[in-house]
Image 1 (cartoon, helix red, strand yellow):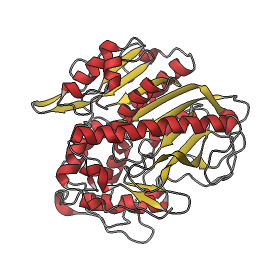
Image 2: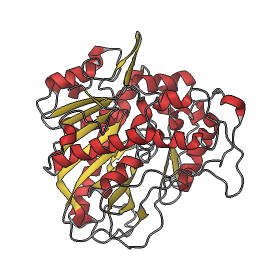
Image 3: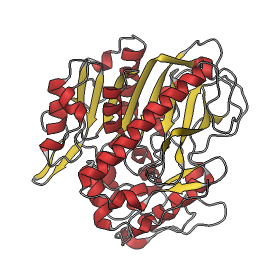
Image 4: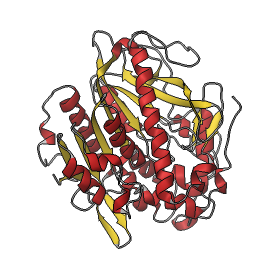
Length: 443
C-alpha cells in the first residue's frame, strides 16, 4: 500500500478547534499543531535552539509495581473493512505492554517511532516556538524494554485497552500504561489511523491525519464518524487478541513475538480506558461488546455535541450494567465553565441515571482536560528547559500539582481494574483520602 500522508495544515483553525471543543478538549500539542496560524510566544521569547545531542528528552514516571515492563508492537490489518479515511483495508498499529522477566535484554521502548516522532515534532515545534528537533519525542524514557521476555509463572493476566483523545497518538498516556503493566496487567494501546497526527507502520510508512475528517460538518457528525471507526477498531483488536491468546500470531507481517505473550492474555477479564474521544469510545464499545467488563472515561463527553442534549451517545441513553468510572475536570459551555461531573454534564447525568452497574464519579478542580494524559508530566518538564507559549500550560493541564495528580490518576485506574478484573478490594475507591487531596468524590 502506498504512503498516504495528509496536508493537515489545510485544516482551518475554526475546523480544528471546533472539533476539539465538541469533544470537550482543550488544545493539545498533537492537534493544535495541525492548525495553521500563530500562537503567542512565551514570556521573554527565549525559545530553544537545538544543538547536536542537545535535544530535550523527558523521563516519564517509573512504574511502581513489582514487575519490569516489556512492549511489543502489532501491525493489524482488517481485511473485511475498507479504510474510511485512506486507501485499502483498515490498518492499525497497537502496542502490547506486559509484565516482563527481570534481567532480559531489549532496547528501551521508544515513546514514538522515529517517523511518527518527526511528523509530530514538526507541528509541536510550531506551537512551542522551538526549532524542529529541539525535543526528542522518540527518546522519552518509557521505563519499558522492547521485546523483553514475558514474566514467567504469572498465568493469564487481565487485559486493558487504551484509546487516546481525538487527533492523538496511542502513546499519550504511557505513564498510566506502564503503571498498569508493572502491576501485572497486559495493556494494549490502539492508534486511530488517519485521525491521529502520525502513525508509523513497520515498513516506515507514516500515515498522517486525513483532512477529510475536518471537512465533515456539523461537528457532531464529525465526532460521530470518528467514533464509529474507533469502536469498530476496538472490536477488531479484541478479535485479534483472541487469536493471540489461542497461540496464533495476528501480526500482519508475521513478525516474531515474545515467547509466552499469547499465554499471558486472559480474554475473559478485559477492561478499557480512554481520554476524551477515547473515553467516549470506551463507553460505546462497552455498550456493543460485552467482552469489555469494566471501563474508565477520562474527561470525555458522552454526546456527539455537548451543546445539544438530543445528540447524546446511545450508551448515555441505555446506560451500562458493568462497572464504569468517570474522572473529570471542567466542561466548557456557551454560558461558561462547569465542573465535568454527572451533576453538571447532561451526557454524564444520562449515563449515570441509566446505568445499573457499579459507578464512581471523581472530579479534580485544579486539573484541565489534558491533565489526564502524559502532558501533565511533559509540559512541566519542557518548561524547565524552555519558555512555553503564554497560557499554554494552564490551558492544557491547569494548576494541579503534576507529580501528585499523576500518582493519583494511576492509583485510581489501578484500583478500579484491581477491583473489577481481579476481585481485589481497594479502599481508595470507597471515599476521599488525604493521600489524594486533589480528587473529589461526586458520587
